[in-house]
Image (cartoon, rainbow, N blue to C red; front, side, top):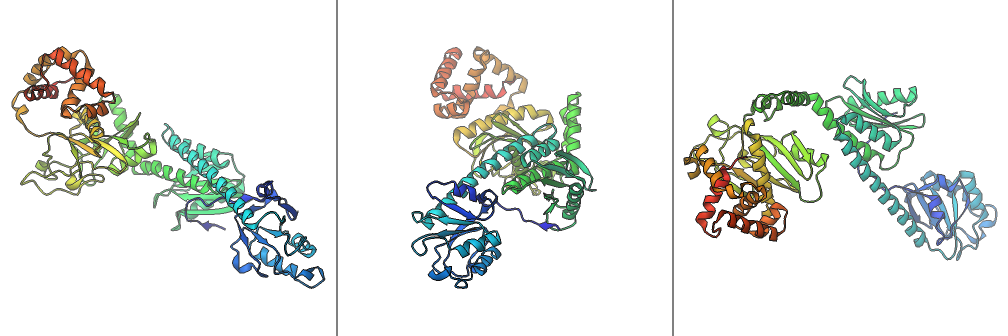
Length: 542
């Protein structure tokens, strides 16, 4: 019979009675009952009540010194041991620990007989061992088991995330999940047919029951259900509301962290099957094939999708991002893309690149134009609209106020390019890289690159580039010098910030700038010289 289950944090794992008996410092001894290795304990509780039933939750090691048992309990009928033990078993007690001395010198024979009759493990606690010491040992063992379980879950999460980033993500995730749970993992399609499976093949009865459980979750509000058939634990997870995809799991045993591991796999498969269901994955695959076969970027850009109800996207932002701590992984990169409103994510090395659709321009009747110039840090990501601009449409997910572009994201440092047409994506990629370098140097959550008309636009581009090449020719053969000079000028001559932006030592920055000054024969303390060099660097291409 199916049982609905609500996903939750993994509970504290129980510990084996055998592990508690192996503690030499406690000196515990099992007198009767099933083998200690088959008994699990979920906690310890002390009670001297003659009926402990109301005070037990189930799974406890009940500790008692027999205060409620009269000293004459050895006489027939003097104490109802059978009724006492029956109540413990009915409450779900896992074992009974009896402390000898000061009340009783030995464990009463009637208690031993009753525990043996009801199959309740009976443990003798020696006089030197306190009940608080036994309880502390139980909690210590549970804490160790909990830590071990968390490590297992963490390793499984990392393995599943890595599997999801492989060229064959769905089969890879199923194989990794089946291996972790030592069982079978199946992905069912909307019609109930097996799309992919991995792990040991179960018997026909289990296979039919798992398929039935998968159909059960698709037709009920609960997204998770469990069952047990032929000694095999079954679980089914609906992958997103209304999609019809289901993850089925069959395992010979079920540990406390298995549900959490399977839930992680279900989330990853939800993302993968959601993309398949919407058809956007096929469109992006088509765009990739066309690019590889020589199509122009502006020809394939419409296949990439974009805004919510905005029609074809004509402009895009390139975002470079780095996590504030650690290195980015496939899952965190995908989550960042989702927050920015784009599935077009590239996680390479320590930088994540995201291609984000931009809202229509004001002159197209659907947004605002950006009026901030150069590269600057953003406090709240806001951009003021040009006077008289049309009212903006609803901004896409992850954008700043009034659709000004991608907004800052918690835990990330972002560099954002100006909105550009597909033909200008390479230039926007360079803009985003420089913006990210400045964001890291200035410790800003987000730095945005945006173009505005200025004096530089009065010079024809060809003449400006020719002048730039001539002026910067002495350092043109050493890319590191031009890169350092650009960063140093953009950061107003700050040695420390330039060093952070370029990931070099500040002395290296000083040496490179001194070399630039010598080769150019220029006084870099002169603001006019700096302005001219900045003009040249902005127009230097290639």
